[in-house]
Image (cartoon, rainbow over all chains, first blue to last red):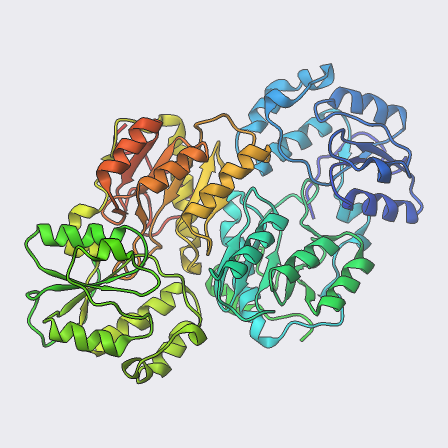
Length: 310
Length: 310
């Protein structure tokens, strides 16, 4: 979906370089690529990637500021294509220990650090391209790790929740221009929480706490977590993801389920996620991007969005 | 600013009925109205209003569901106009103990309870009007309790923060259609937090916690809390307010200041607020509503918004 610059290098071929941040998603991606018969080389980020999971793959540890070191090792391994995947909390420029390859890119990097995450990430993308690598999205390298359209487990969203799902996707679309988070919680036509820098898990904990304290007075098993990429978001840098932990968090927050964008949301550990959702009686549903009005929505458009699989 | 229905009753005259929720704002309003020479009768809500502060005024305690009781007492006191002011966490219908006057309005009330707060509040407004009362805004009864245009204390916003203020007001305007909260925190062109059901104080605590944990890595005294009414919001029901506690919360969150809409934001205890802001070195600034693009803003419009008083 994303426009890419032409490069003189041969397409594909060679192992895929996977730069790994935090969480289980990088390994789900690496495993899926390997199952497709393509070798992978992991570049786990020190302080972020899970060392135990890394051990199962060929890998080279790198620091967040060691762009030069990465380029050298990746070229030696014959990698032409790079995937960036997993969480990394935005460091301050001062916290970065930069190697020489990074320092040469410093003016670009400093400019990139001003503004929202999208801005930072597109700057980082240009650095890779300038060094001759092709940045690919995890959803391109292994489409099977993204959420398919329709319900994932046994539970299906009710007609009553359709309105909250539609409003939620429309709200996320309306906020897209502001480079905010990618998730919100709605229940009974009310917006209970909007995600920004705190992340999805912390937002779900907040909803659970508001329910426990009586600040939110709604019956149990009502409401939905909606998650979607920003309008025009470059999925090569940052794709929404859900996992068993997201389902557990949504259950603790007293929600009825989770709605995401099919094909544009990574699901880490799908079997465990479905088992957790079925056990808790939560729905997890993938909506078509057009249906969810991610590409050009307004509050009015919300009424056009239906619920997949009902 | 708000269109009002015509009523057969004589305008003004008689004491002003002030229905008091939580916080210090109801008493600031009552005190200001009394200073203007108009008597007030307080109707503090049981479980919400501060009993010690209530004691200084003529008053009748009421329960949240006792609309009939309120009407009877307010008529006996000669009140024709009513102000609703102070926080009340939205109760569940089941929690309400309804008196007969309320029960007669039940179909309207049940309908009102579906949807966002705006929806609930306009339903409540219709109940008062149907009973022959005129609902007035606190900003109409005592304009001097709202924030004036320009900086409130000694500290002024820098040119560097103007962009975050503009983006913040544009974000709030973009979310207006969704009946979400009325505040956000921005810093360095990033949206750090968006308020929904948790309230402003809890949002500021979240920013402080993210700074402490290293999730946000920004220098101290950067960023701004923006607060604004929703586009088209009926200020008679729900007006943004700030007080000394808001300044203290913003200081703990490491922000440079607070930006609100002049004339549409109540300031409780202005002297203490200014003292607190001056002590902490925070700016508190009132923007014109048009300037802040509350009435029809977009992300693009943000660049048009300047900083008052610089």
